[in-house]
Image (cartoon, rainbow, N blue to C red; front, side, top):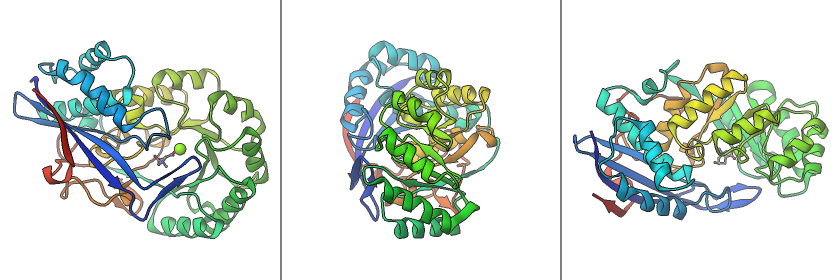
Length: 368
Ligand code: 0XW
Ligand code: MG
């Protein structure tokens, strides 16, 4: 089975009840890129990558499409049955740009699963469970507003709540954390995520002022170096998110004893197989992690669930999808939906979803 055509689509995903706010940016819509890999067997594989605007990380939507344009012509005729060799071929065509390569790799894994009549999770070890815990991420807001959202989401069934912080007076963030904990107590796991928007001093201040409240602090500062500096001075477990963008960075963080776990974005890491490797590395050091991505629709989040189902339950922090922030599923029948704060793994072969052509945006490039 070889690739005979690659089609690239672009779609804007408006943020439902938006904008989505973080310490460093405000987003009204996210630009997603969908790839359709057509094989000479007639089977079709789907991939997707949706960077979170141009400021969240160095990855951005136009970069994804430019990288795909750079590689796609030379990928026509490549085998769909050997994902490792396919990824090596992409590395021979373009340096870096793991996030764009991830979209194509997701498509290859979808095709491979469909070819063998198995789910993607079966290709990377097998699903340990069919239902996965989700987490809800709020935006930046005032204490009462965020506490109300946290209460609602815990009542809905979410076992983990992430509140945003940073980019403002740290006293407000301290008040938010206090108010949220007064409201939900230990009914859900609490994460505080400044998305790089705090100085080291602010992060220390937040942590020490809330020493009595159990939460994990996610990516408080801009760089790994800053985080390593403050780590001995804070009272909470520390998770890295934006600072880790590859297996190499995960290994570096582990070797520097820089964190207690990770927020792992599938496309940023390079795709499904890269995530499976990182899953095993994290398990070897008992470092829990999420399975998630920056944004996107059914395709990228089906891939996230396929990986999450293979993670040992005690090592999986939770799954995040932007399900409640997007308007519709690409696949109206088997699309990813949040059910009482949890997600069910799709049942069909490959990724287990089949996008509707009318819902995947504009065709922007085709290669054959
Ligand atoms: C909460 N998220 C998973 C949504 C956005 O992708 C940002 C992100 C995070 O944890 O930084
Ligand atoms: Mg984060």
